[in-house]
Length: 171
Image (cartoon, rainbow, N blue to C red; front, side):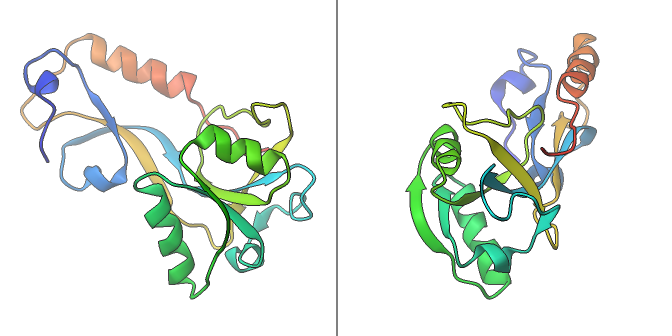
C-alpha cells in the first residue's frame, strides 16, 4: 500500500478505508460495518420484504451507480449468481441514483451507509433491504502504518466517528 504523504509526514492522524486495503495494512479500529443493499422506492412491490434475493431484482431495470469500484462490483454480483441485469439508467452520482429510485424508476444496489436518509433529495420515500444471501459484507476501518504512532487526538476522532456513524437497521 502507498501511504498518503500527509500520514507519513504527521500532517494527518489516520485514514478511513474499506476492506480491500485492510489486508495489506495495520488494521486498528472498525468504524462501521457495511454491505451491499437493495435500495427501492417506498412504493415498490418488494419494499415490504425483510430481505430480497438478487434473482428477484434481475428482471427489473437497475439504476446503477457508475463509479469505481461500484459499477464493476455490481456487475460482479450479478455474474456470480449467473444473472444478467437490465440497465434502466447508469448515472455518476449517488444522489441522482437515489432520486431516480425514489421516483419509481426501479431499484439500485448500494453499499449501506450509516445514518442514511430514508428519502431522496426530492423527499420521496426510499427503503433499503438486505440481499438474501447477503453480499459485499465489509467494514470501513481507521488504519495507520505499522510503526507509526498516531497523535493523541486520533483515538478521539475515531471514537467520535464510531458514535456519530452508529448504524441502525435499514428502514
